Length: 371
Image 1 (cartoon, rainbow, N blue to C red):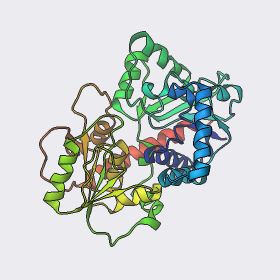
Image 2 (image 1 turned 135 degrees about the vertical axis):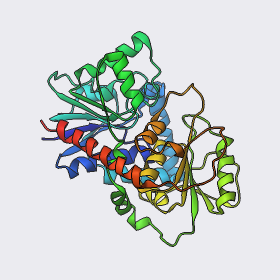
Image 3 (image 1 turned 45 degrees about the vertical axis):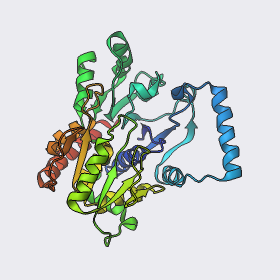
């Protein structure tokens, strides 16, 4: 019996590759053989670029790299992780049509996780709903699938979610996702943990063990992303506030161009997924706008503050949903609100709650990933 996982595992982003790794490793730990269906996302379908133009562009990039060399070390380290740490199908599927014409065969098809149903990202591609599978009896499961944002309404929303009709069991990552499915399809779905939370603190410490430096001075790790919304200038002012209050060094992970270059701050690029986790393990405080930045802080029990969008334009509730589940709503700071005086959270209760949810989530996988 073998499970085929379809997820966004090739996005050059720490959260994407680590959620894929964690889900695969968890399935192995509970005795379920599996591999990731090597669907190359994103591809031309998601970029609104004509295929010929895309091919010409890739050829130009290849020639440039041959002449100049590829200096994007971080991308190379993540790609190395994908090729060496993830177990993927032998065939690569570079287009949605390839999935249809060379349909991979598994006993169970598992969607998940991350923003695999984000309508903004998919550009109409229904592959992550396993729409390419012709066998109507094929068993389809969703684990912790997320919409991120859901931009379809009315007839379009019903049409999009009609793809769920063929699923045997559905679990999602956020409360809002469950509400969307209930309201539009009248289907009940279970709320489960993001795959990175299926592995516990000790698992991640072991994962990053070779990179951990216990003699490191105290520092604030900044992991502020801007692809979903712009938290500046508030985020930078918040960082400076806690820098002044605590007197810790500042380490900025994946620095954004909107940061004022502060000569006293350390800007970190070109790291591996293992080094990424080690930074959270060693930090005295994490300031983040990232869902996975929040998830790893909670799981590893590192003090943190998550900046939450204060506008109504974004219906993304990923961070708030996780904070509510773990009883850590006070660690969310709404954008443009007053800066709270620093306090270290008591993780005893949140870890207990996380362990209970972890058991439920693993139970979902055990129950549904067996033929």
